[in-house]
Length: 404
Image (tube, rainbow, N blue to C red; front, side, top):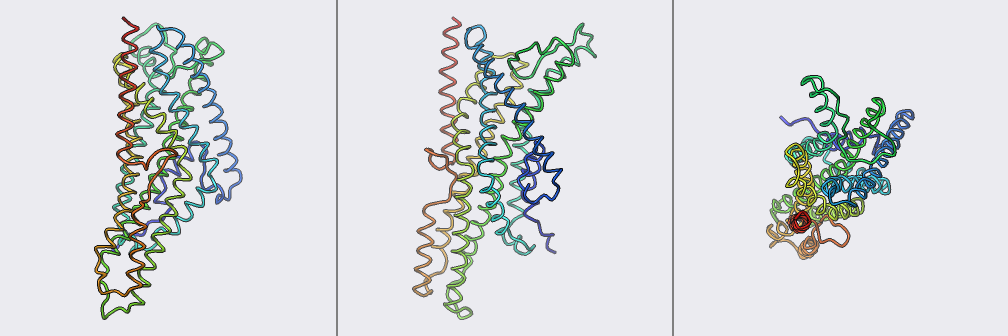
């Protein structure tokens, strides 16, 4: 018995719903509720206004901390948070600029999505979706664990010390180092209002940072699914036979060529939407990982736990993008091998000519690209890690030299 057919909305459910928690509704144009749209927009604008005020405060704190060697460790502590915030901001800006292209892209992905249960079995949709969701769950958990740990740890620690361990005062500390033009800890209501502003800003940054990558993962997963299906169809082709005419064989191949071209077009949509955010992502990743690694080696045990979660989330984020970039290249290049390995010897000349064109086109694989960067793959990941270590070694040597 065939399983119940999945819909495209269910396939892409996670990134769409996660985005909506900060007020960003990708399918706003389909929503009939005007009040709901207004409320989500208000939540989005107010949230990003609050978030960017805190980012500005982090920048001021960072500049002030750089003026003294005694606070250089604090400066390197806030630096990765600023880098993370910039990437989150830029990803939201890129989404806003390319909103129309993204909606068109998702609509075309939905048209290409296998509709019936039989088609989904042929496409091995369940296997692809299961692997995709595992990646999404792990990445989301790590990203939100970082923001939650930094945000809520000071209040939880102070609460335990004050209410359970009998500390004389409730320590009013914040999770992120931010400069405020007022005394944020003097009055209780001011402290908690400021604290909740930090918590919401951190959550918004985490969602804006990860949701764009989740949409990228969903898009690449479906493209790989289609490329794999094209490869299987080519490999399973039995060649010219008495059961099929040359015209039927040609029509069969033409349908695969059209589908291949459509998938290549959609892969270009992915690049047009995400290329610049990926560029900033990789440019800041090396420095962010470097500063986090430096904090892990120079901080107290209490802070090390938080920064290890941050470091893990950053490494996983870069790895996920590079992994899916590599998977997309591999799946698209496999089409050429499948076309060559099929039983094409007895086919007519026109069929062979069209098959040759398909093989030639597959030699330029679909890929995820960032401007000025080579196609993103595992090599990109190794370069990011290598650059991070070089920056870390330089920073560690400089810090140790000044300390002596």
